[in-house]
Amino acid sequence: MQDDSAAASGRKPSLERRLATILMADVVGYSKMVGENEERTIEVLRGHREVFDEILKLHRGRVFNTAGDAILAEFPSAVDAVRCATEVQAALRTRNDHLSPEQRMVFRIGINLGDVIVQGGDLLGDGVNVAARIQTVADPGGICISGSVYDQIQNKLSLQFRQLGVQNFKNIARPIRTFSI
Image (cartoon, rainbow, N blue to C red; front, side, top):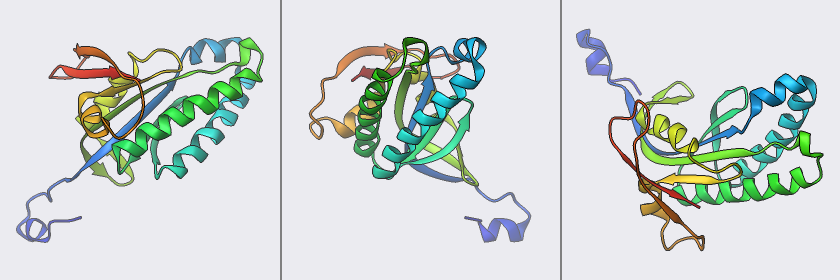
């Protein structure tokens, strides 16, 4: 959305911002898997992504960026994002059960609710960066959420949460309350 008065006066238009729930998913040990068998790894990733994308749509999620094995998705609701993440992890566990051990692909997922900057179809800023950092402390096959997500979903979903305490993450200015599902 452009600020017409800013454009008319020669000032830069203000950035479009919005509150969003960001889900970041990343494959554990992906580079090693690619190094061992590139084609098989890509095929397994494709199959896992089909499952991931289908469940994402069911929960009103939208992929806004990918990088190799990483997926960044946006949700209008923290409850939808967490439901999606738990269903994705359950579905991928089942899919992995039908694969040989060297083919199994496990994701870590991090979810944050925060303010983001809209740039075309992409989202940028601290809200996205926090989701990416939280993902790194999730167990393989697990989900970690920020305190802002926890505050929105508590008493709305029957899940077990484990407090991980306040975490300091690389290049994130403030400590983040973190929970594991």
